Length: 193
Image 1 (cartoon, rainbow, N blue to C red):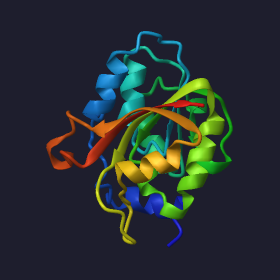
Image 2 (tube, one colour; image 1 turned 30 degrees about the horizontal axis):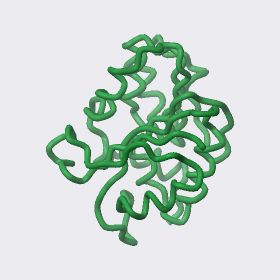
Image 3 (cartoon, helix red, strand yellow; image 1 turned 90 degrees about the vertical axis):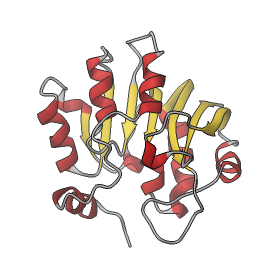
């Protein structure tokens, strides 16, 4: 199955959004809360309704960009946060998007991609980050299956996948996941090599 913009728009239109927490993910909120530099340029790819972008905006991070296949998802964020600049809500395929960022927030995007796209994801994340830029967020920690999304993975597989392009500073079970995801999320912090 090809996961196109039509596929994702249909999922949002049908309310078939099991990944949507309807709030900022607690591990990502904790990371954002310790950032002092409000000038950081932040990207949230595959952001969906992007409560993370809303939280960033409300905390004073104004250089926040969301890239998503689904126009419906981006419109939802714009309705919730009318002041969010429309030009920072980008309806595009992540793999064709170009820019340079200090931080990229990973929240349910990686796990939504077909596993054969994972090497391309890593290479494109590396290209989108400024020197010493950081990839931070959550990856699912459950066995990889043919059925998805979401698609799982393991610490060992992720280390093998990312280590060529990133210095892995942290990859550990998130201590503050929501109850439904307890022990199923790995918090990652990786720095561009």
